[in-house]
Amino acid sequence: MQPARAILSRPTSPAEGPRAVPSVLQIVGNTPLVEMRKLREGVPPGVRLFGKLEGFNPGGSVKDRPALKMIEDGLARGLLVPGKTILDSTSGNTGIALAMVGAALGYPVELVMPSNVSKERKQVVAAFGAKAIYSDPLEGSDGAIRLCRKILAENPDRYFKPDQYNNPANSLAHYETTGPEIWRQTDGRVTHFVAGIGTGGTVMGTGRYLKEQNPAVQVVAAEPEDAFHGLEGLKHMASSIVPGIYHEQELDLKIGVSTEEAYNMVYRLGREEGLLLGQSCGAAYLAALQVARTLRQGTVVVLFPDFGDRYLSTNLWVGWQKVGEARR
Image (cartoon, rainbow, N blue to C red):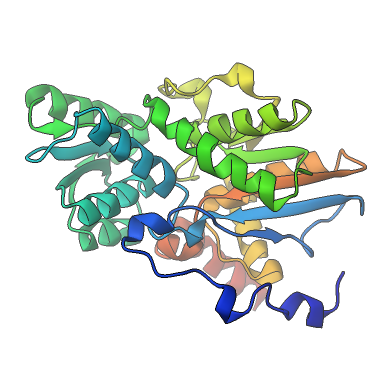
């Protein structure tokens, strides 16, 4: 472990930092990679673990990347024109990203989401001026998909639907940005990439780029271990509507993670690494640790989709409170 002085030294001076930009949309991407130095039990010293902090995107999550790309694609193809409303289904983060992009470009946004998404997500969507339409909470993201299809079918001329689950621009965003960033940030040394499965866009697009640079790179997906889980934003593929952009044959490994273990990992990441993250981040890091423990040498990069501040009212942190009470 490096001394605190080395860890605390800043990588750049203020004169070398980001420059002013004309739009919030121009600061999507280029998120930092941070080395995980403490929470690595059982990982050999020759293996390095890095987390890519997508919460630094302006909309607060990795979904800013595909949201922006899908809207750019819709504009370029003439599918999104003045007078139309952006409509899509979401479990939260893509909706927030679409609301942000819509606000920046001056397009109204309507979002179909399960009514049990976190209070914070609902508030952020409203803050961007988007309209939320709530689906049955018991049907999860699949229920939102079905309701969104119904709304579109009833008034197809009113809406532009990016269709995050089936739009190739989703995974293309990660092929063009997330993958190249990881390759550059690790100086081409990445050996394993780990990400959770929601739409599948992140793991597909990033994995394709990295494998083009080095076919030996292993692409690993984390998913809930069963259909009834509390990992908001992730899909258990065997029991879900499988996204059209998800191709499981492109994965080298898929790892199931329990909700309880993912929650406990989130608590540990906060206390031991100083990273306040969401529950899907805990799931992805568990999978990354499982992979890292099997190696002798390597560089494992795990994607952390967002920060934990938009989950503080959820069962994730109710559980944390119970853990704290038990310790007292």
